[in-house]
Length: 364
Ligand SMILES: [Zn+2]
Ligand SMILES: [Zn+2]
Image 1 (cartoon, helix red, strand yellow):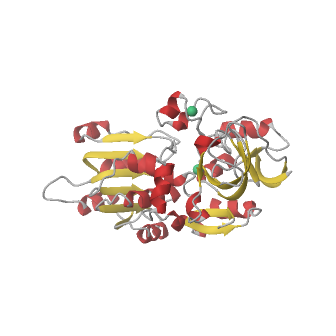
Image 2 (tube, helix red, strand yellow; image 1 turned 180 degrees about the vertical axis):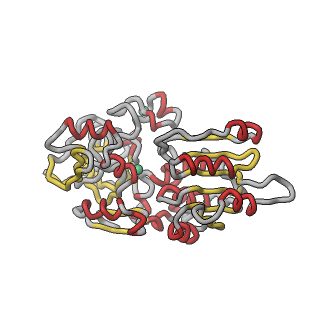
Image 3 (cartoon, rainbow, N blue to C red; image 1 turned 30 degrees about the horizontal axis):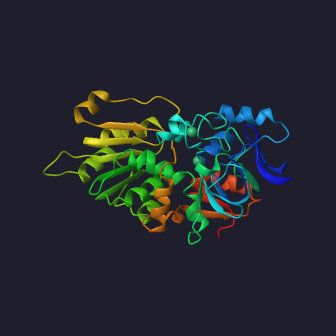
């Protein structure tokens, strides 16, 4: 038996004894969880907003669904077809499980992997048991784990499971951030701050951080934001256009990265963007937004949205090794692995606790 953080029904989680995972498929590994973290998505599941997770939990009433899609593991057992890893290896778990050879994986859209259990890339802690446990089963391990360099802390490696690739792929790369650009980041939660530090590595001329909360703006400043705008106090649109006034071109930003997932923040991005710019939407939206296509088409603006595929994890790992990105700065709280209930409370009230990412387990 082992201990795991189990979701049984909306608003009900518990750290309890459940059977240890076993190898089910040839590409599986079983890992001992050394460190893990809690994601905003886990909070959505706990609130009952992710119906497929509630259905999975209710289908096994004794255990429920073990949450978590981020983690550092030490491999204790490998399936017969695993070729890249062996017992004892310490690895970063990707939030996306990828078979490595289906139609979508071949196109680097692993978010839609067709061969994975559940038929999509995000299955851990979503439709199969996840990483918030003493042990976890990782399917398709050869394409879903990354060997952890010994020189890096677990705090920095954990950010490579999800938030850093999410912000980098869906925000920074899809937004075509280039050297010399002016970039606005709207929303400075963990993903917005990850967009900030990963955009910074591409040397834009200026990063404008926009949020409603002064303490988050202060954190953004410490992480390298050049300009701070509290959109609850000033007219953010006016400020951005003032800051980007130029003799040779129209005002506005080259890239606007939306990291909130609410209509006003998306609509603000539409108002900030300069001709030829890119709006990249990272936020998870629960309702429609007003698409100002009549303005955007004439400005040659492109728009991108997406789910993370984690195709950039190795490239990000290299940038962390080169110290171009230092993601451990995002970790604000540490807990022991058996302190999940407390950690969920702290992360669930992130603003009051000034929490960005909470790490459970060893901090290496
Ligand atoms: Zn996540
Ligand atoms: Zn696949």
